[in-house]
Amino acid sequence: MFPGIDARLDRVGFTADALEVLVVACGPAPRCPGCRARARRVHSSYERVLAERPLTGRQLKVRLRVRRFFCDRSSCKRKTFVEQVSGLSERYRRFSIGTKQWLYAVAVELGGRAGERLCRQLRLSAGRSKLLGLLEAPAVPERSPRVLGVDEFAFRKISGATRTASLKLFKGL
Image (tube, rainbow, N blue to C red; front, top):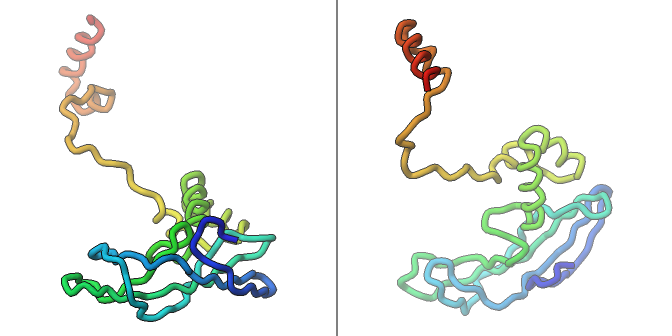
């Protein structure tokens, strides 16, 4: 079901409006995000629920069982950390990476309210705030512009006599 991802399908369940699958992470021990040391000991495991793209007209919910590991380095600030299944989950996200790509595309094309209406039709759980939160602000230039052009707005700000002189100057060029 998830090709190229270190996870195995454990169980499938059906309800009237949703399909629920239990997936278990089974990859190698991850590295600590704080010190990059390879984990050796498992602390515990728990289930995360991820919203996935709809399948056969039904919502698809992925119950992902992940492991929590100890970081054995005494110099590391983290005592425990959770593995992330690359290609499926990200930290603090309640939807899969594939769903994030779909929601990003909807947010770019339609924005907030219209995107929310489309997501409702596609059976994706996303509000307008979530969609707009996926968008990134454009980069701000480091320096402000040095030269500004003269436009009609600037002509309206100056007095009548100066304006007449300025217009004669521009017509003469």
